[in-house]
Length: 267
Image (cartoon, rainbow, N blue to C red; front, top):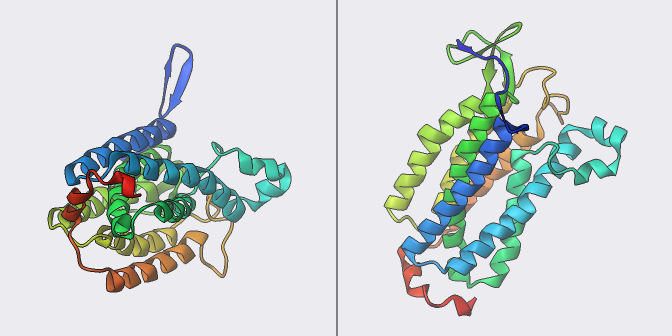
């Protein structure tokens, strides 16, 4: 079993830095710079990819919070009122963030040529995976996704017995499955959009399974619909869409974007 003593924090000059917030910020910054580096390597216009990142972040974080409150904390919404929806720092949902990012992405792609849509989509997914690794490490350290009591050797020892740490499992899955799969997809120069499809197809069933292991009475266990969590419903939709995407993606090579390096004005 893995010993656990509570969420770590660091106080410097009277300021307290909490592990989760620090790691989420580190993930956003790291993913941002990685996307810029990858865009430069394939010749994607830098101003355009910066606009793409700004748009998905602008939509992603607020909608992540709204999704969290509306679907998981209706009791708080009733008690505190609609102003709770504006406190974007007070709780976020991963799938809510994905939904917000998708909305931002759909708005952004109306401003660029069609042949670049899935190329930039794949770039954003690469940055997302890096940010996700940092974020799920944060979830691991604060134990905000506790599972059921277990005797599994990767269980986290807590008062009352060891529990699955679902954030830790997602961290391991991202590190040892999603990131290697993304690396191979990029290395083989798969057709644009395949990285988006592959990441979705791999993640959705794992997330569905992990949500079924959530601890009874845990933070995310109060609200279920038909016996399933909101994330499980979204996982089903995401998996089906990933299969559709694989079937409908057009052949192509991401390297062809190099020819557009100096064509940013076409967008």
